[in-house]
Length: 510
Image (cartoon, rainbow, N blue to C red):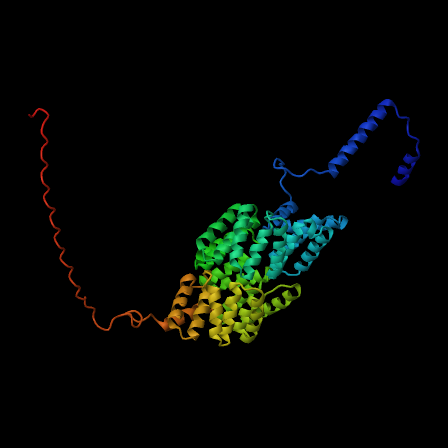
């Protein structure tokens, strides 16, 4: 008799009568089943006293909810968890918003814009279930973050301001606004939003934006302090690695390649999947003369996270080493990346415009960057457009954009070099010298191609002639003029003598 037949026979056997003791046992068992079922269905939220460590999906959900980087493994677990849940609970607007944020973080980590349409679909589904009018702030914030990631800062601003209008104290609106205002070139509004964010929720997201705002204004020391605070506030390896990478970027921009290398390597030790730090390490190695290691790291970084900026940097490094044929590979990759990104709404016009200005068609660069300037008036767009105009020989117009890029306060060797070359084209030798010196003082290794050209141009101009600028020194020796002598003071007249008073007669006199 097989197992199924035994189960059928047992089912047909009459059950024994239930005694009083049996009834008590059945009741107790039923109560236990109800309690267990309730415990499974009504799972209490974690509290601060819960000793259980958070799982991978919980860690990732906490990170993306705070606008912080998440570990790749945790992110994979979160995506799988939410996708499985939403397959049976399609009306859970909060889970759709979390899934959209997770897709966005995946796009950031992988530099793959194919995740953007998935994020947009999840966030829009969340807004269908719970519209913006009913306060679906997580999905609205996610839509703003998505727009900023695509460099559509005007749309990012609209979403951030919508959240702020409905809930002015909701802190998650302000990182979106800082990024959007910065991309639009409204740096005063970006600083105001950052200060409000620090008031509402000091932490990793706030300190990262504070560092960004301070850097854009040229306040280097404040930018470093804010990013160090971000590193101290980081809770997981991915967050710590991101803060170390940003500190490395600040060190690189001020010309300290050795310190930048140390920070990039610290980020990679903390999170080996931090591909941006790998690209940063390549940049620092090239500045230190370790070209072979730099080429290796650039190729590894592009294999993990194909960013257009890294492709341009590798191509220019190979060009500077006389390896023009090899440089065509990353340049072709740059073209392919911009074609790949366009269908998903990603704006790579600044990087592509700089590439075209230096290595392709400067006139096409001017057209591309002029359109970008009509949308986003940031210092990065102003610098790139000014440089493209210089390459087409329009130095007078180019200088106006170069001034917009440099006069806010951002200390960039690239910006200073671009302005210097534009001023050289206009014949302004003094201004050219001043800005070339600024570029070399800011970061003498800012580019493997342009830094040597800056040194050559500075040597060709030389130092200003002794004696100061023309007409500053008199033609004849200076002779002290004869000053009139002061008049002798007249003596003051002596006051007249006062008569002595007559003494009064005494009472005893007769």
